[in-house]
Amino acid sequence: MSHIFSTKAAMSAVSMENYGIRTVVLTEHEGLERMMLEYAAKPDEMWGEGRGKKYLHKKLRKQLLKEDRYFDENPDTIRRNPERLQKFMDDCIVFATLSAFLFDQPLYLVHPEAYKQSIATSRFDVTSGAVPTLVDGISVLH
Image 1: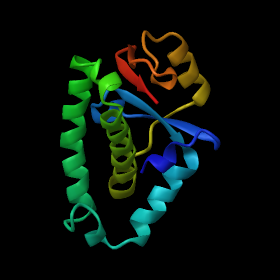
Image 2: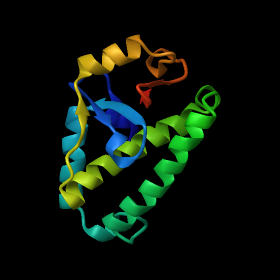
Image 3: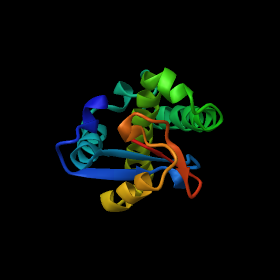
Image 4: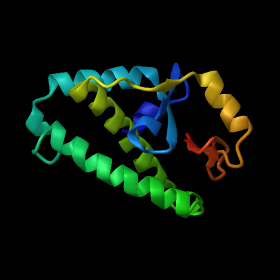
């Protein structure tokens, strides 16, 4: 899913805080819409190792909460293992869009300018290759 993180299109920052995940993920707005269309178009058995979208959602929630805690406790991992961070961010977007699709939960978007301001005052900034920070208790990731 990393193709949804292009920097040339209109961007949206998705807050994961309402799911208990202290992270904000910057992604293409068009990618969010594309994923919602995929959920509607593809049969349920195409998701979650054949077990469906609800199974995938439940599995991702557990995994993302664990990963969020891990990154909070081990911020240096982000530099050492950027692939793990990328997978985490991709999974956050999948989880948020699945929540919207399955349960009519809103996608919590942060205006890109507010996101940029958060980065400017952060201790860490992944957009520049550094480790992410907590801004008002939320990990800010790109």
